[in-house]
View (cartoon, rainbow, N blue to C red):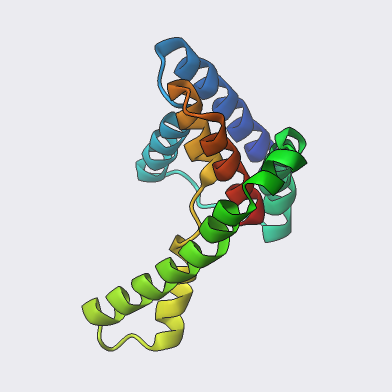
Amino acid sequence: MVIFELAIALLLVGALLTLLANRIGAPYPALLALAGAALALVPGVPQITLDPQLALALFVAPVLLDAAYDASPRDLHDNLVPVVNLAFVTVFLTIIAVAVAARLIIPQMGWAPAIALGAIVAPPDASAATAVLRRLRPPHRLLVILEGESLFN
């Protein structure tokens, strides 16, 4: 029950930070990241490990559902090549680049952990990028490509 209460409290803090971000004109993902970093640095905060299935159900699934609901199948079809390029080719190249860089920096690291590290950091959080870009009012095609890429990732 403690984990559930903590998750609800974190969602409430996230909602309040989103309201604050709208009021001061800052992108809300930046405030959420700063609040998370600040919370991690506070001494004495209990360490809680979430069950991966709970994290998937509470955090990842609603974001994906929202992105899928807003996505236009026609726009995705029209921009399929750049979306696939970003979602697969670019992520694969980033995995390889991070693995090679990790091996160069830490020579005793094996290839499997280096590739795993690359796979962890390669897929971008396109929904955060989209939230930041919406304030700048970029071309519609750019938003469609970023949202499609986040759905594929």
